[in-house]
Amino acid sequence: MPEQFEINVFPNPFNSSCNIFVETQNLASPPPEIAIYDVRGNVVTPYSDGKPSSFVPLDKGDSEIAKQSSRGFVWQPDENIPSGIYLIRATIPQQKKTVVCTKRIVYLK
Image (cartoon, rainbow, N blue to C red; front, top):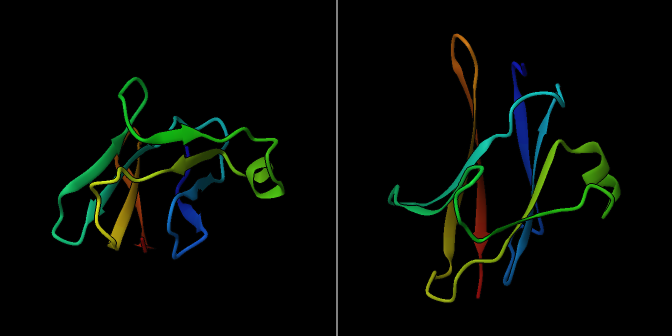
């Protein structure tokens, strides 16, 4: 299980979609649960296996970064989501604790 992991987003800031990579040290770790929050703490787009969302999985062969990444997604915000600062939160549950990572992104229409 990963003791730590990181979120990489590009482009940041973005205007139509962004690529989100959750990189872990252990590729056998369970898939992270990802949610995007606005600055007020409201969930804008939740993601977890089996739940609908506006995340599209990236093919690991799309880019060199994707090949090195354990999980990759494209986020295309809905038209009703305003420009602003958003927080991506990735969570991986472990036996004794939950590992959490957060990254700030900027959405410009």
